[in-house]
Image: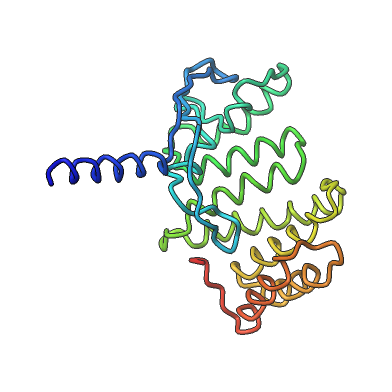
Length: 234
């Protein structure tokens, strides 16, 4: 009997490890001041669906918190690839001047995303890249009831950049456009712009190139907008 219990326990523990989020430490140098910055790069994770704004659920650990990191000295923030990128002296000076306002302040995970996005704006990166930084920051504030205005600020900036990405034809795959219009609608609904949300839900619903799931989910979320429900927990 003891042997059977031990086998069962081993199987359960093994299953938990199989489903767990794992990451690998990698140290890089800040491209602005050379200070070492440690990332925990996601190696594996198990997802069980997603929230209505595409944030993944499941055994994902601190995946979103670890995507973007910051230099503790100058507060340069970005993905690990951003830390490995080569910057001209002109770019470095522009970034340094931008970062001055954060000197001596404590930067949390969501603020790291804001800084990363604004640095990409300085560099004139694509709007879809910039939007994802803002969206990631909003994910990290989902349960932060004392930071609702900051979360809405990030969502507002995310939807503005998503709209610009569509205007600039940054999405080559036409089947993705309905997804983006749906995501714009979700950002609009979550910040309380219900009329705009309804407009973008309808664009997603009526898109002839949409993926199968889009219509039912967009109609479901549109009902919330019609009721003026800005629920951000879902």
